[in-house]
Length: 269
Image (cartoon, rainbow, N blue to C red; front, side, top):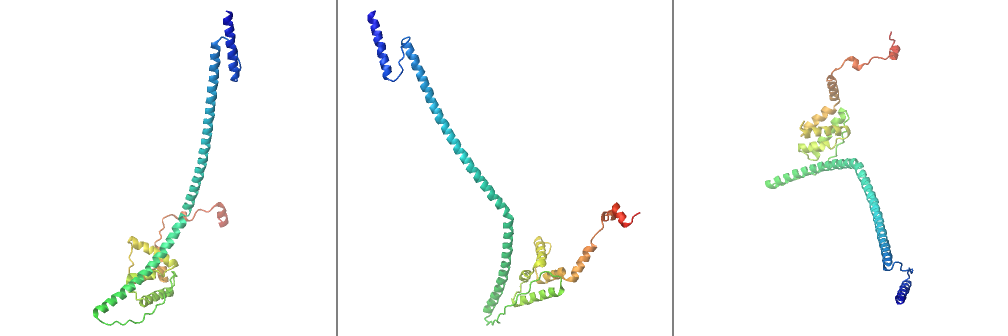
C-alpha cells in the first residue's frame, strides 16, 4: 500500500509540473481523470464561441462596408436622375422656341425656292429659244438684257392708287424679267406682299390647298387682290356683312333693366 501511495503522489507532482510549464493554472486532480475532461470541454466551448464571435464581427464589418457602397451608389443614381430631369425640362421649355425657329427657316427656304424656280423658268425659256434657232438654222440676235427694277412691296393698305401702282409695276417687272408662265407670275407677285396682304394670302393659300378656290393665273390673282383691298370693295364687303347680321334675341337681352340707382339718375318715378 505504501508503494502505491508513493506512485500516486509522484504522478500528481509530474502532472502539476507539466501544467505549470504550459502556462496553465495548476489544479488539483479532484475526482481523478473525470474532472480534467470537464475542464477541457469548457475550454473548447469558450474557444469555439470566441471563434464564432470573430467570424460574426468580420461578417458585420463586411455588411457595413456593403451598405456604405450601396448608399453611395444610390446617391450617385439620384444625382444622375435629377440631372436628366433638368435636361428634359429644358428641352421641353425650348420646344416652342425650336418650332418657331424651324417655321421661320422653312418660310425663308420657301421664298428662296420660289426665286430659284423663277430663274429656272427663265433659263428653260432661253434654252427653248436656242433649240428652235439651232433647228431652223437661223442666226439669232439677242437684244441686250436690261435688269428690271424690282417692284415696291404691297402691305395691304386700302388705297386705290397704291394698289394700282403695285399691279402696274408687277406687270412691268414680268416684261423686263421675261416671265411668261402664269404660275410663275403668281408665285413672284406673292413674294412682294407684306403685312396685312401677307396674312390675306396665307388664308387664300390654305383655301387653295383645301380645294376651296383656285388662283393659278395673274389675272385671277389681280381680281382677288382688288376685291379684297379696293376701298369701294371694302365698303361693299362691310355692308354685306352688316346685312347678314340677324336679330335672334329679345331687346331685354341687349338692354338690361336699370338698377334703382340708375332709375333715380334717369328720373324714374
